[in-house]
Amino acid sequence: MSPRRTDRAADPSARGLPLWAAALAAAAGGFALDLSFPSAGIWPLAFVAVALSLASLIGRTYGSAILVGALFGATFYFPHIDWAAHFLGDNPLAWVPWAALAGIETLFMALGALAIAAAYRWLPRVTSPGPLRHILTALLVAGVWTAREIVMGSWPYGGFPWGRIGMSQSESPLAPVASWVSVSGLSFLIVLLAAALVEAVRVALRHGPRAPRSWSALAIPALAGVALALVPAFPTTAAGEMSIAAVQGNGPAAYLDARGPYDVLDAQIAATAPVAGQDVDLVVWPEGGVDADPLRDPAAAAQLDAQVAALDAPLLMNAAIDDGDLVYNRSLLWTADGPAADHSKRYPVPFGEYVPQRELYERLAPSLVGMIGREYTPGTDAPNMVVDGVGIGLAICFDVLFDDLVFESIDGGAQVLAFQTNNADFRGTDENLQQLAVARMRAIETGRSVVNVSTVGTSQVIAPDGTTVVSLAADEAGAIVADVELRDGTTPAVAAGGGIRAALTWFPIAGLAIAGALADRLRRLGAAARPGA
Image 1 (cartoon, rainbow, N blue to C red):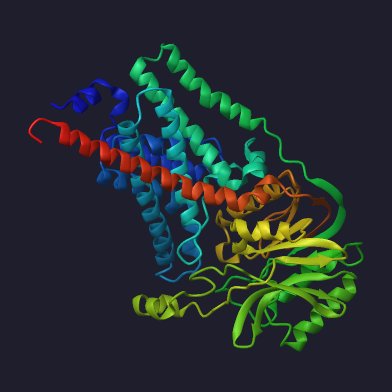
Image 2: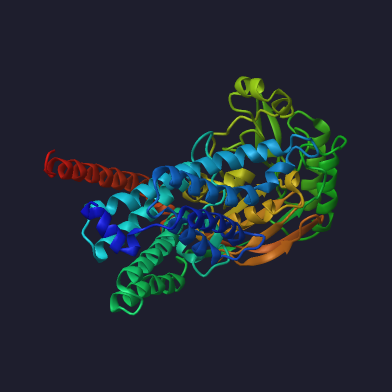
């Protein structure tokens, strides 16, 4: 037996779980991670989930790392986004988009698990036993995990940044940390704490639970967690108030809903009626709140003119807008003089609002792709408007998931954020609550109030600290009116957000590559030094 094998046999911290136990840990971790998000919202389970996933990858062969990584990914994503099976209604193939999306996310998780397992394999070969090894291991593992999260949120077709670890903490005392380091930075810190806890358990296995170094190793992540929970949100500056009405029409706004002409618009108008006569500065309707193009449909335009006159306030509405040969998911600021400003959705949903490489996918699944008639073009304009001198930052539904767009709106002078969304395709699922948690984290991250308005719910006004000011439940028609606090100033998360994402992407990749190269070099030198080599 080689000396390395002898050392591993004598050191229980170097051995991984049996494959069956690792598989159970990974599966349990995936389910726990889903429960950390709404609707369950048991945020401490995010730490448990990450720790179980990491423990399942220590000592794994590369093949078994892919297996347990896929188990973790599948048990998280399949239940977490089961709402994707509702998009095509009662179609017998409605499960296909859900299985495809959860399946590709599972594949990404498996590939990332391979990289994490490599980090656990290589670092012991290039570092000496001791605290430094455990620190570097926790840092590299947390970095690789976060890099995987960033890549998954960026590619392919713009990515799917749903289910980020940091977004699970919208109700957690750690949420204010996002205003300093962004949601990506918060993800990194959460995984780092979990990785440090795993390393502390390994120290205890090596030296015994009563050894002083075991206690100190356990104390470090515990104290760090308490310290992070005490971090206050970065203070932005109060800049007055704006009276805003958000209207949830609860109309037939789903893609496959049966409806007649103007049914969604009529529902919005009916729900807006109680706002008339109140002193409001802006009325916000949700994404898809107007089921006609008011720039081409005089009847729809006349209805909007009547609304603005009755409300004595501008109306921020949204519709599918033809612009030459292109169609945009576009928000318009409708005033007494007609449309005064507009913004088009930057990230239309792949396979929902357009089909990338349509000819290819039509050959693969013609009946399903044929059901998606929409082909929205991505917008390129700034996500900002000005209403009575107040900067409004915009994000249309899926756009709220993308850091760059939200941060761009703050850089453009947004003093309040308006998020327009249409959750009607996922009525009765957790999708709207998961997206609402994202909106809450955006409020904390940017230090801005958020007006989150949906066609069918849940609509809320959220304060800059993430607390709910006023709410309208799902599946109810109505309007909420609030004096919304305006804020100036830029949080460190916004100011350094791009740099934080870049650092959390490239530093871990570089660190893993260096560890791998050094481990390979030492292996070659060891092989050359053996007798008979």
